[in-house]
Amino acid sequence: MGQNSRFVKAATTIAAAALGMASAVGIAGCESNKPVETNRIVIRDSRYNPPIVKIRYGDKVTFKNEDNIDHTVTADNFATPNQVLSPGGEIDFVPGQPLELLFHCEIHKFRGKLVAVPQNS
Ligand SMILES: [Cu+2]
Image (cartoon, rainbow, N blue to C red; front, side, top):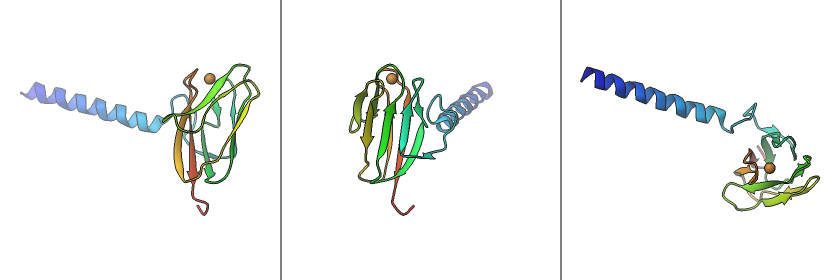
């Protein structure tokens, strides 16, 4: 009985640690989880730079592919935006409401996040 409950406790601790890590990391491979206020997201070396962007909704954000291979900007829920970007290609996206949009490259699976906040925040 004593050993059994120790095992349960250990397993619980591991699960909690894994959860904490997942939320702290947020997006795998990102150096920083701090949103950067910018209207420009550049894809370079198969990453979105910066990986987490904050804008005001109604403002335009431009994605540009500066790599020499195709990438996509694809919303995780496959709603807008969903676009293949050839080398040098650009796409604009204007969120019509406050949102948190997770997006990724369908081809290479790297990830990014766009936070659109109310105009007065
Ligand atoms: Cu890609």
